[in-house]
Image (tube, rainbow, N blue to C red):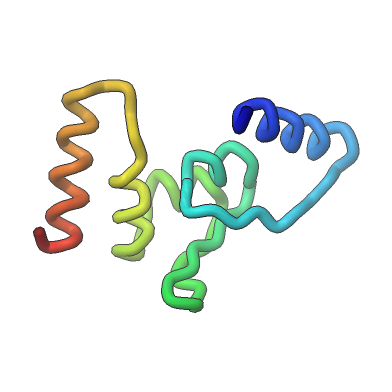
Length: 91
């Protein structure tokens, strides 16, 4: 269901030049829909930029934690990300 809704948003954006403010903790979804990404932490904008730049080179710890928490299909990569996520949280 989520994939269909995201696909519909993407189609509307392309066909009509539709723009919207999309808010989510799921950066994978944000990356799918957005060309420009802003990351809020405790109500403050801590990072912003072109989506693939923010996702590929996060500068703020909170952005790194969000990215590290994303699931990936490779079990070894998922394990590495979980360890990175724990290290960022200090656990």
